[in-house]
Length: 457
Image: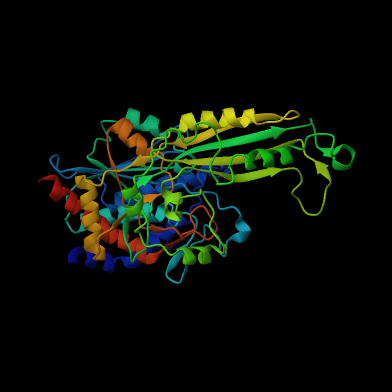
């Protein structure tokens, strides 16, 4: 609608400046030293929701970081959209690999570089600005509720409790989430599923203290050597995960589904070139698109032990640790997989060491229906703003709360993301294209318009 485009154009610089202000707040949920900044960011989200047109906004305390709830209710008979996003961000480490300060946003080549630019402040803020656009132009078609949390990057451990305690307040017809990606702006897409997650930490302990490697080396088990062998044993020569029972519940794609998935535009040579890798590697028998969206994985996210400072220290370490995540697919269950991992990891530990396994957070895989009114409204919104039909895809990431929306609130979710796979989320130099930011603000009002219209039929 021209009235939306005019309003966006008139307020473009302000929309951008307000996002940059939000990105300057280091709302790192995983690190307790940023607790005050996380609270400050919640306040900033509240103020922006009020300025955008919400009639009611509340910062809701949890046992961890707060949830910001807001609403704009226009008509009890109109459909209600629950917008979910998160204002917390990943740690910025390793800082030395950033080209600019992670919380000092820089615009270069029409891209915003900052921690949280894409994941998820930039994408969440599109919905705040879209509300303002619709509110100021008197074109609101749906009731809108916002639930913006501060713990997504640490597993959303308190969000389930909030859902249980606020079922009436959160009543809606659909959940709308922009925390995912598109293939490209030339090939717009809609994600129809997400992988689940089981996140573990392991500790291998050998001697009761660090030892001189010359005096004790070769006679006492080295926890780092042992840990490396244990981790290596968890994949076979075909990169198949060796945990007994791991694949028992995996919902295999049909040949038709695999064919459809692999029709998505994908240039393997460009993919390798961008990542500076000579070849791809993964589970034998599957394409890269299948491996990253529809197959379960097991990856080491961090590993440490012994001496890692400058120079040399000939030490045989007392302990070795690793953080390991497993991406899950339908119908795997995160608690079951965590238990399988624990039993298997303990069973392969050799004599001479003890093993401790800790499960951190997890989430369930989800598949969203493509025949629902909400999905059709999202597809039509993308078609209108991009001039092209969106391509259905499967996302490789995890948003644990999506499964909870269905199990607790009985609500399906539409994944209307505008990020790109090369936006470096969770990595140094995270970015978000200014074009994508404003394309989201342009597209989201169409979703509300079409969802309202289609819901009446």
